[in-house]
Length: 225
Image (cartoon, rainbow, N blue to C red; front, side, top):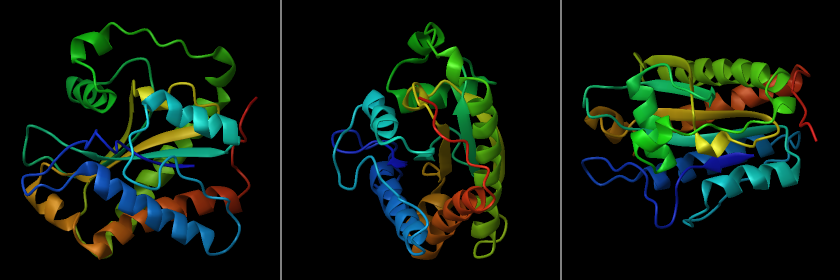
């Protein structure tokens, strides 16, 4: 299941020229679905296929109900540092490795950092072991694949790497689940690129290639119910 972040009343991050995160991730998600659906090997579903608002907890609930094997939530990053750039992929964690990741999670969760720091996630122990390990593997595969595919068209694409943070949208997922931050909309060069079809295709190709690799190699971690 592909999850285009934000939507409807929630535009997500907005670039200097007015580009909205919710629109970009929906475009990328549709491209991923089209690429994965061509072969008929994958049943690709999306949490939203139009500009509508879906609460964070409902997104993973949809994935659980559909008994999907993989949940990929797509987002575009933003930072007070206008020079920040690159791609990163996250898995769920009760904490964040640094202040910047904590601020990112708070923004995506729609809550103040102070509230996020006080939250103790209730994560069912049944789903934290093998599933988290598979999520880490998928996250690295996705991040490497996206950077590699984008770099063929836009040399110098930066990888921020694999990270962990307390994203609400990943809480409760009973399958391999990752969250992708594909570029910084706050960076003028990357915002401009996010308007270009070849750039969006590179991101979509990267995610699709990673999912295809998991499927073809028989290492998908099936949902646990």
